[in-house]
Length: 366
Image 1 (cartoon, one colour):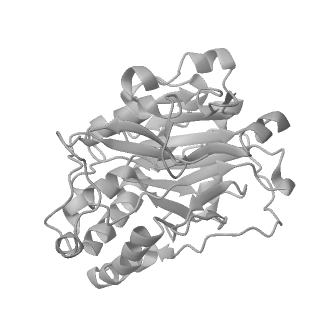
Image 2: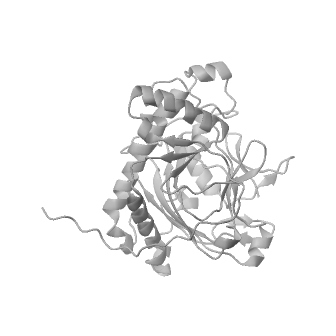
Image 3: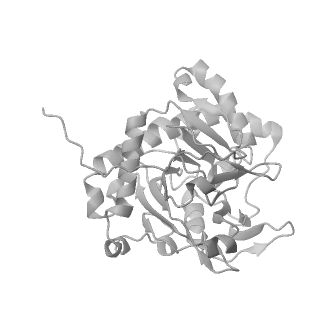
């Protein structure tokens, strides 16, 4: 049988790494090559437990994709932005407000970054459900379907499932406790995201204090981000300081989302993070991102896993105040509809909140 020839994608050349002396967060590095046996997973689960209960962020190495494969993914990631005409993009816009789904394009200037200054975002992204057949896609992307689908499955089954086993062990639960609620073939909204940030005017930078995407939590179980060299991502530490996330070649950046915080009763933290203008030596470059946003199965309840011996010892600090506990589908849909579109109200400490569902508010930082 002849070898299959991969379709040609223009090579994406990333920006050079910054030489600025930035205040980087100290995040643990989790080596998935050390998770092959039950004994190794138990030992590694302690590192993951501590990372998720303290920082809410960590790096992953030896995740199964070589540097060459990762570069190929970034080449494909640029296709929906450079190889699709604007008119065609508008034909594939996601139904965010109508259906609470990100499948398709989120075009630039959809989100409000500063209500006071009237500044809208300069972020464009294209989202592909793990079931790539759920909707139509632009013609330029169709040749890459086999690679995108394989990429989604790899992230879901080889990375997400591996980390869910470690997170379950960290709660002293059976390894498959969370995995069984995250089936690749189950109905769900886990998706690949290709995302591009474009430089903004100095006027907009001044109005937003250089914030490109205000501080927020993600709303799924976890987010897998493929590290790239443009410095812009920052996390909010427990001490209230914004720290930069450093680029590590061919590493993943992992963070907890709301859903994981809910099912862990607050033991694992969905950390506030934001995107800001890059340092001076990287300004003027676009910033291309590759993500896998991990959602639980649509019908999974976001109730705390009270059978966890850990939660029985330390207690539950995060849950819904009253009424029915939402499913993953209900929480995801509510947050997708409201994100970046609805006005927020300031609290006593200056944090802005936006109530989403059953008394739980999403917090935003400018």
